[in-house]
Image (tube, rainbow, N blue to C red; front, side):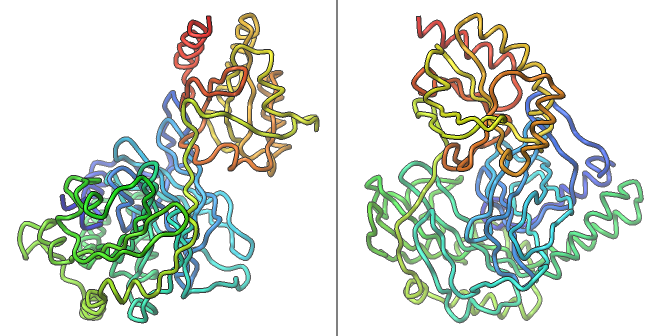
Length: 471
């Protein structure tokens, strides 16, 4: 319960360090995806019951949208882009140690070469980008497009010593929400934690250094790390009472939600504001008062002031906009795109799929180790598929920016099957959960199966089953 309700770091890190595991300098490898370089640190708030999040801010602690983030386990790499709240969320089946890299940053920010690593409990990594020039920003107004609202935070929530951050979720189709989190640590303190964590990982066999870090980490964790408000956008007809009595985590929201506020409707969505009852939350998270972290006075006073903001005051800063939730493709959806092949010829999904019983649409990236590793095997498999009236079409995720690199990799692997580049890639393939991802589609582009990771047994099984159904 504590890990789910009060978003904090874990001393499990200490066990890893003392055991001499998960140190930097060794790539982990598996057989179903890709893992890139190892990384440096896990940070503040838990993203959800089944997700990690990466929060990217500038040096003034303003969120930075549009950052391309790579998130890898030992079998699969995922790509995400930070939203208007500076957050990219990555769902996982179970907690683990994942590596995180900033692959692309917006104009005005310096490239970030730092390597980060999560803990094996769900949480959030915070990345502070340095400016290469002074970017324009509006620190007061935040836009959460998927949930569908804009907000100007109450004055008490501006210019804080600690850090506020939004995390935005699509919980399920028809239910979107955003959560406002708070941790009583400044960006500078976070950066220092990251530095010392990385140092400890690099020197995990130095018991004195590791023990010093563990002592430091215990003090670092001794602060407020919690959440304050939820904004729910619902278009499946659920009432506020039904939302409160569902259990997205281990317990129903009603167990720790205080006041609620009906924000009204916008488009197809009904909006609700939910305030966290901090006393209820802490009583659920900690067995006794002795377990509750003791923050420094400045944070304690700041937290007390934040607690005094009621749901009505918070609601005044909210303006509803049309929600723009985005869902990943699923079985039964249609794959549609227009692009070009690597010779510059127009390539449309309609033309590519027509005349073939099945098409394997393989999404890959030049940055993805396992995507590149499987290219020669895909080329060999494409010959077998052709004999069955099927074929493979590759779609390079970063082909627009890395066309020359992609073409070089395809040439080295001897690939002859069609590969395409799509300008509007995110529209064609929204929220891809991992790379490589392969969609098996029929001649009309209807998805009949989805395989994540470089899984040849999975490809063959999916194709065989689809062919049986087609016949």
